[in-house]
Image 1 (tube, rainbow, N blue to C red):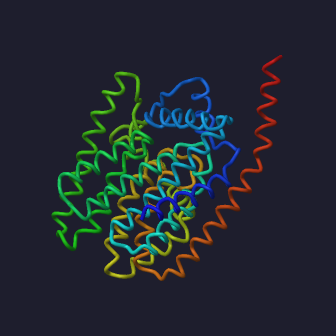
Image 2 (cartoon, rainbow, N blue to C red):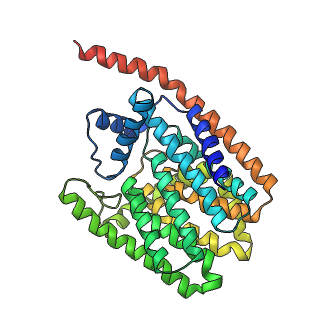
Image 3 (cartoon, one colour):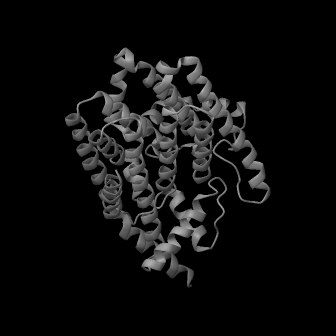
Length: 361
């Protein structure tokens, strides 16, 4: 098991490092570099992310001096590779055999948004590691439903929220996965009761954390504290419903294809119908926030935590040969996209030199 974990981590890390991009991604990449260059580790909505990045970059600099953007790309790769290895452990925890657990990790590690954000200066590579730690705790919770693991799952969900505020919805996803996995053994009532307990504990910690950390200037809030508040968020979503088809396509269907299409086909079988419906429930808040906030595609960044439950469902339902084909297809398409996108790197360098030259006059 330890050898497998190390091998999966190492292979994933090497792949992501080889594909590491020089091109910065949207505003986040620039903002992260600007803040860390200025010695700022405060992030208004992701309080743990910048301190972890700063510490990791300091350690990497002790090993080998490198530009900050390269060190941060390595941090994203390490975070994502860690998440892929944790996915393997989660699959083993659920009783999936070794070969299929490796296949589960391969499916997740080759998913388009997972690969893309492993190669960028962004929050989501680091976030992925913590979301998969929470998912592993959830899989242990499935085997031993009780207050100990209920609290640990809620705490791991909140820890993930500290790394990226989209983790505010993670307890709903974990709760839905728990219900889908246990309702036959525990009954719907008991399964839903456990799930509601995790969500309630997570919300309670979240509501306490924002004002307490905010009082010390350490946290400005989460995705939930946007310009829209309470029912205003619902109204905001309804006002932007015309963007829903595009959001579903660009954030849900396209980034997670073909896995998401195979997953949707499971709804044709009665035994899998509840799982598919519960995962749609889990995805709904992320899609709503995307409708509310996104003006351009984020390539499925907010929905990354869905990749592990989907992969496990596929491994349990389809022949391995088909799923290995999915892995190869995803690796090919995503690699081509990354390489094509990163040709802008020289343009970024020329632009930066031009700005520096202009600032000297």
